[in-house]
Image (cartoon, rainbow, N blue to C red; front, side, top):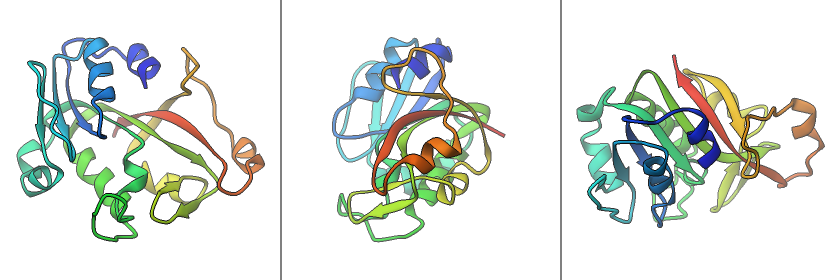
Length: 182
């Protein structure tokens, strides 16, 4: 996530972060120049640069945030939405619905930093999904995929179909996809 944010300048930008338990993504965004962050999730993260809402508050008021952000970021969260892992309702399309809601919050042409698992399509109930040839295109519909970063690569890398096909079932690659809203 850090390298992706560093390569796509966030200076002065306003962002929305679908957060985990620790404000890692929020801190990385601020370190890379973001001016203001709204963190949504289960754990409040409040500082001078970061305000927070619960997921329920955000969902109830999502129209208020329509096209309000220059970028959206999440790491390791989308693939768990709708699987009941954090007490959420079981919903086979929870991840797709969350992507759509977050996408609506993004300005046209804005960037979406999506840290997720790539591999052969799978659901590891109630832990996470792995996105492959079938579900990944559904997840990123409405976006242009412009770059991919690994945790140890300072520059964009390429993910190919054969690379995914070589993975054994349930093996996966953790990658940050950089998407541009169409």
